[in-house]
Image (tube, rainbow, N blue to C red; front, side, top):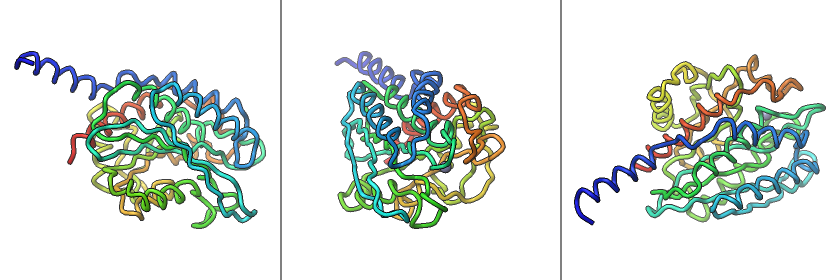
Length: 289
Ligand SMILES: [Zn+2]
C-alpha cells in the first residue's frame, strides 16, 4: 500500500472506529419497549425466561460470540436459577473492555421496570447493533447481568447476584486481568437525565467517561457531584478492575422501585446521549495501553 493510500485507509479506520453515529436511541428505546411489554421480569418468572430468549435471538444476528453463564444463586428464599448473557466482539490486542447492565426487574406488585432493568437491556441490545461488523482493538464484552435486584431487602448477600458470580468467574479464568475498564449502565433512559458522579467508581475511568460527555456537549447530564452507589460495578472494583457506574438515581425522574417506572417516563434522546458516550469511551479505552 502506498503512503497516501495508507493514510487514507488509516483515516477511514479512525473515522469509523471513533464514530458512534450508528447508535440509535430510537432503536434502544424500542428494544426497551419490547422487554417491558413482557411484563414484570423478576427471577423465577416466565417473563424473564422469555426475555432471555429475546436477548439471545437479537445477539445471534450481530455476528458476536454469545456466551451463556448460568449459575445457582443462594437467595433468602433458597436456591434460584439465574443466567448472565455475554456477547463478545473480538479484538486483536489481547486486552478487553466490558459494558454491562442488568435485565432482571425487582419483584414488586405491578412493577415493570422501564428504566430500572428495561433501559439497560435496551441500551445493551442497541450497543450490540452498533458494534456489529466493526473491527475492534480490544475484545468488547456486552454483559447482561441477572439478579441485580435484592430478593427482599438490599444487603451484601441479597443483591447483585449476577455480577458477583461473573467477577469471581472472570478472576478465576484471567479475564479480569485483561480488562482495561468496565462501564455499567443502570437507569439511564429517563427524560431528565442526570447521572451520579459515583464516588465508588474508579476516579480515572470516571473522568474519562465524564470528559467524553463534556466533549459531546452533555455536561448538564453529567454533573460532577453525588454520592456513593452500590451497583453491579462493585464486585469488579473489589476484584481490582477499573470500573465506573453510569446511573441516574434521582427518584423524581426515575420513579425508582415504584409502579410509575413506565415507558412514558423515558426519552429516546437519553438513550442517544448514553449510547454515544459509552461508545466513545470504549474508543478512548482502546487507545490506552
Ligand atoms: Zn432496582
